Image (cartoon, rainbow, N blue to C red; front, side, top):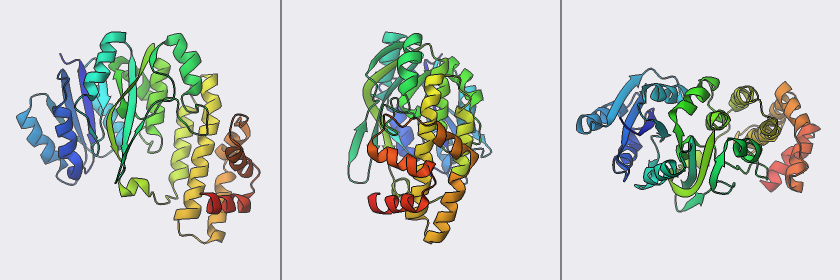
Length: 332
């Protein structure tokens, strides 16, 4: 029986897949199975997976119709035999000591979840990003009182207390099995926020470490994201998902978190859509008049924010669209 199951969802990842899989197979920690979920790839990804599986008995390959990242992760968890589960995205890679470090904390603390940091790999440099909440062991009471109220905002406008990415963590499988049914397959924005949030609500213990072994590749496409007119709709799906979490401290953060996401969509509309000012203004007006936008803007507690961030939300709240667009054009 493996102690750890590592799940890699794959969709058309042939360009990066060799580096990703090789980095997993060379882990110092060897007590794992590797589950490769081919999510309906149309390139050579499945063939690459099968080639690796023929050479290493720890590898399980599962091919399915394309249903998206959340569904692929759920499939991986349903196949997993390990007591703990980790995730790696197919276009990233990990240091050889990553799971040794995380599982050492598991063995020491017997935690339901362990979370480390992430290395953002840009074109010409790399940057280590850590959880803002202090490293250490947190029991169920501490999770409720110290972690959850600061996990999304700690304390600045979107400065995560806990890095939401599931790839920086190992989860006890039983925690994920309780969390994942609450996360809709349709989520394509903030799915890691949803999975991590519901997992923390079900975890009885959490360990935070400064171990940083996951390389999140910042490609040109991920750095320079084009405007997607459907992104606000996808954000609404996320809100409907995480707004069901029954924790007062968490819900206070959700409104601010959604305000940030709404602002980011409007900034992309102004800066990256190519729309005329008149058309961009119409889109922003539609977004701000949406019921969810009105709700979160009215509920958001901005008292602890910087002056700049307070101004952003106040302009949004009062539909001062011309000033909001000017702020985006001049400051961003």
